[in-house]
Amino acid sequence: MENIQKHSIILWSRDEYRLRLTRIREHMSASSVDAILLSDNANIYYLTGRVFAGYAYVTLKGEPIYFVRRPVGLSGDSVVYIRKPEEITGSIGIELDVLPYSSVQRLVPLFPGAELKNASSIMRSVRAVKPPMALQMLRESGERHARVYSRIPGLFQEGMSDYDLQVEIENVSRREGCLGQFRISGDSMELYMGNTIAGNNADTPSPYDFAMGGAGMDPSLPVGANGTLITPGTTVMVDMNGNYNGYMTDMTRVFALGDISPLALKAHQCSIDIHRALSEMMRPGNTAKSLWEKAEEIVVAADLKPYYMGHRQHAGFIGHGVGIEINELPVIAPRSRDIIQEHNVIALEPKFVIPNVGAVGIENTYIVHADHAECITLAPEEIIYFDR
Image (cartoon, rainbow, N blue to C red; front, side):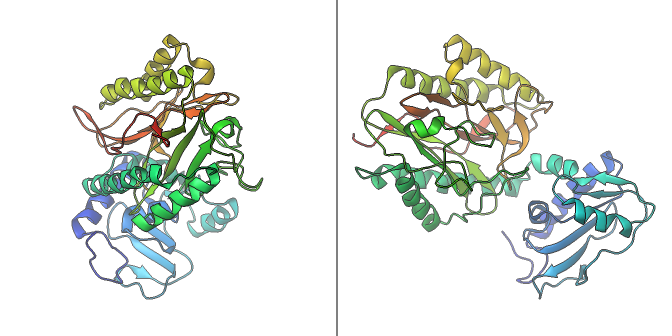
């Protein structure tokens, strides 16, 4: 990242900043929105390269205005240290998907006569197609993510639980430079640095739309590792944080202690087969729904449907965009209307839960190009055994 000034409100290079601002304005114009007021951390980071408390006010013409509350000391002609944005006329886009109702009620009177529109959908569409700098940042996160996973076999010790192993992985991840922040968009979706789930804990339903749930260590965060011992004949699914620079990759690998059942091995290979088939279909113009349907076809042919994307509870998707947040567009789901675009970045995660064994299957992050899908989470895909 090239800093313009150490304390400048904008941390992207000038060219990168102009590219991102232009893309926002193109989507604003297509949605007949004259101005948008951004306050969500992910959207402010997308535009400026930093997070601040306040608002970014973007119009179709002229320079954006940055209304900053905190931190003090940010510089630039467009920085205004006030509590509220200036009055405007015309249509205004506000992030209705993420702002609390009380905040919206305070903002609306500031724009008398303005037509209120939802800026959240505009920004989700903007961020779905990554600019070149973001693609490079994602590749860098993928490389560091893979380095952490390469060290996991050496972290295991006999008698460990899934929680014990996760703590060790978190330590290695943080020392590798992981920021720790697992930024998620959506109502009541919470997670701390990812999931490491052993054995039947993978079959514990959670409140969230994840293929694997896990009971968690406390009812206040009911997901992930819960202290299940890693025992012979069971698997450990590792789906840990890949955020090393503000853009995050998503990757899952499976580890095991001792031999696991033929059914689990079959399901794991089926996941790899789905990746091969869908990576060939991830081309601009194809529908996200068609990818879901192809995966479903492969699962049914393998007679693995009861275990697919969960066992006791099933997830409603097999893939999703990643970037500043872990769940961006497009969504690979049966009713998705998304169309694959060049430079989408998509995490595919066809997974299975096998009772009395655990979770199997892999997750990779791909960059969509005109003629191929580039995998940027390059780690061994076969099951890795702790005792071999």
